[in-house]
Image 1 (cartoon, rainbow, N blue to C red):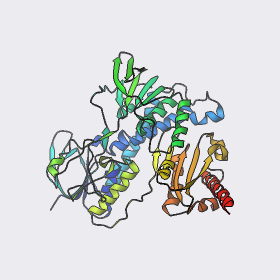
Image 2: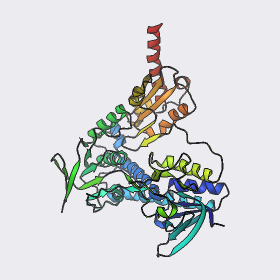
Image 3: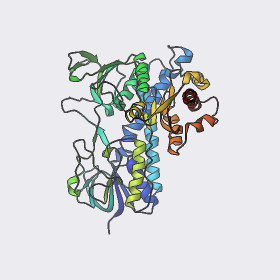
Image 4: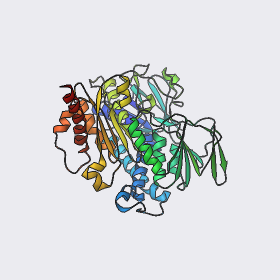
Length: 467
């Protein structure tokens, strides 16, 4: 008999949910992680610290209140790293306590240390003192997450040249900063430091940023970031970084030289699988450390599952949680529904972006006719009250059956608002539901009704011309 029915490697969002789901189904469950990383990358160095930092930046800079109180308004004139770190450490501590409590309440055994395969059903866990402990399990779930990818050509010193993990360890707020890479993480941090007053330059090889987002929404974000003095260098690449006593110079392939106190590389993520002993279990990973799985999150070894960032796209905490739950149910032979195909994407820039469904470009390429309905926060009473004059919500509506094909939001609470559209789409609703529904007033949610009326008025105009 094995020591456990289900053993989970990694205590991030995917690992937590897998362990708890299996425990709820009455299985003997263990979860393996280092004592300093309970909650995984999500709580300790990734999602939670970065979103807490963002909240602290918004509050201390008074950025969201300047529309009402003037551009010189600030809650605190001299913002320090200590100010930002205090709130971050508090939230991380509370979240770790929550995770520990959930694992304990569900009678999940926590094995502290680094886990490694020694066979298809066996794991050895090396504790902080170097002692090895061996365990066996019927089913194993890999949820080890990712770390920032570090290009081999770049000399990181975690002070002047850093990756996204190094942000929370900065000893001061840089006056100048170069962000290499205009993906989600790069743009999130670029917007935060721009809000703090840093002069930020974003360098990106591609023609545009956030290619998977709606173009109009991205253009709105770009305009807002330029207003915060962010400089964009598209179709450019960093050839080298010269480190000096008082900072660094980013040398671009085009010959441009950009001075910076800090250079942050956001070059994607690397799966944390290189020290898992995958070969001993009959597994391997690709060049980015990702593990291949089927629709049930099973690897090529049927009793071993993998979930979360370690399996690649979409690499979101919210999706990882659901993957963990589904993998655990499948591993325990319990029927469960698949993840709904309509999943929200949230990008915590300043301001936020969030969307669910398809973009205008995707629908146009697929030759699916649609109408666009737009609501702007400045037209809403709530938008005026909170001082958000730039936010917008866009609905993409089928011209044929009036169903919602996509919802795209930019501005305050975008990541909250998107779920209304997601729910209507998920339940097969039409734009008429939003037209006829009553929304609290004054709210930002009212933007759905305004955008729905905009779309239906356009469709009505076409119908009049045809009749």
